[in-house]
Length: 80
Image (cartoon, rainbow, N blue to C red; front, side, top):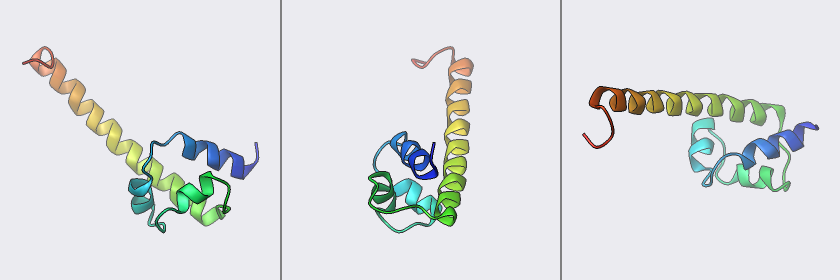
C-alpha cells in the first residue's frame, strides 16, 4: 500500500470532526480533510505529527475506558 493511501485510510477510521486531532498534532485547520480527500499530500513531517497525536489521543481514550471499566466493577454495574 502506498504511503498516501495508508494515510487516507487511517484518516477514514477517525470520526469527524478532525479538529481534535488537528489541534493535538498542531496542524492547520481542515488539513486532515484535504489529505483524506486526496486534495493535498501529507509530508513525512505531517504524517509523523498525525501519528504521534493519534498515539496520544489513543492513550487518553484507553485511560478513560479503564476508568469506566473500573467504575463498573466498583459499583457492580452502571445503574448504581
